[in-house]
Length: 394
Image (tube, helix red, strand yellow):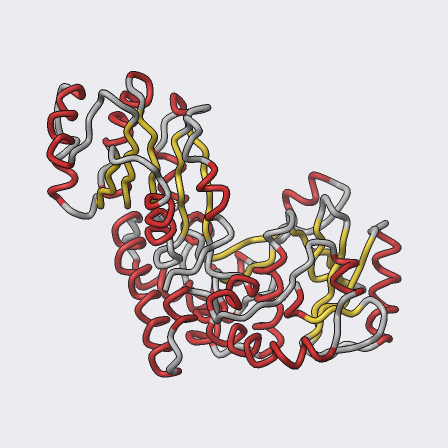
């Protein structure tokens, strides 16, 4: 059974628009499955779905005269006389195909849907000449709302945080608690979520990590010290939710700061980590400020680092907050802090395993100081107190 992702609707709406659609994200997050669902919604026989990991499919586009490619596409019953829909999976396997895509877009009635596994690669893959011709969508592991859909569970999620607080109730909390506990430990990769057996979940998580390391890292990167890069990954997993101190990491691994920066850039560009900057009204301080690190998925974080439940909770809350707005954090060297601030919405969040009114009053003092419009404690437990949300409602 196929479950729709939130991106399905906007992608489906792109069918009748002219732009080239690019879907990118980590491996195994469901890019191919999602585009196949869109493909089936196209009411035309003049469509084809090609996998560029297949050398035969690559050969379709290997013509010096791009007009001759139509002769190759005829083998798949695709013709230039009417609008064609061409879906290309894993286009990073054939970088020069971008020139073909641009030519076809400019000269024929062709709608392209493309997938690729790395934003790091896509930044250099598409030339400036495609500006205005493409629209890019990013897909991530399941958030908790999608997680419940994959579990065939119906739960109402409110966009507005005031409504989240107003509609919280203990019955709902108890109903979905076991699902959120599973989400905290095993994350949101679709294969892992759909697997019921714990030992198989762990095997899938290991397989996903191995796939990332063996394919994305070894294929896209040119790291001479691959073992150092691996060690950096495991070191960063242990520091999820902490500030990224490059000097300490450089010293611990025995490599230069520029090398660490290049590794971090790759991990960020391939969706493995997220870095969030400090909140400050001084732009210069924000740019130079130390960023905090979070991991792409709780399953990977838990399986390979065995961090505390508090760290898992904070990581999961971040992954579910980033869909709303740009996220930053507030923290002084000594004194109050706020784990997350949604910048445009002006909402602050402090994550606690168990929340109480005292924590809320402390948060209020800091939030008032910063001029935030709203502020909440996000907890793993249920509380009827004002200003406390359960993590499963985020």
